[in-house]
Image (cartoon, rainbow, N blue to C red):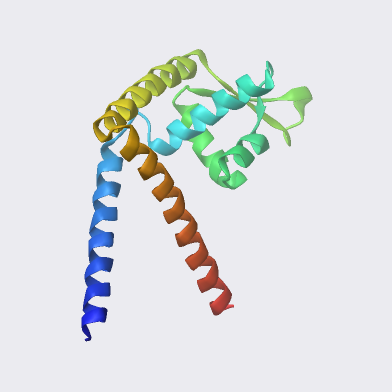
Length: 161
């Protein structure tokens, strides 16, 4: 293996280990012990859409799936768990079961509020440790990293097809 190949491999391993460490740290960065980050995201998106559209009758599950960039079956599965926990309520208007509306229950609203406060507080503490300049750099670099990974993934798919 050439020196250039060894260096590239060492950098690749360092990148892999750093990303793995971030992943492990992020797993522990929970806004609420009783919710997964995915469930928290669904509740936050539901709350956001409810406020944004001033919906009193609820948010269509299809609109929630679109907001989250998830498939309808994936969102429906998450809603099932949240409904079982008493955090979300499903409703069909005029008995039409094809169109499902979602609302946060009082318990869901309370939990989202508490979890969002904790998440915001922990995020602020974390970013405060980095400082303003490093935070700005990190956010730009993360966007650049996501763009680079997306480009490579698109290129790989194009080459395979």
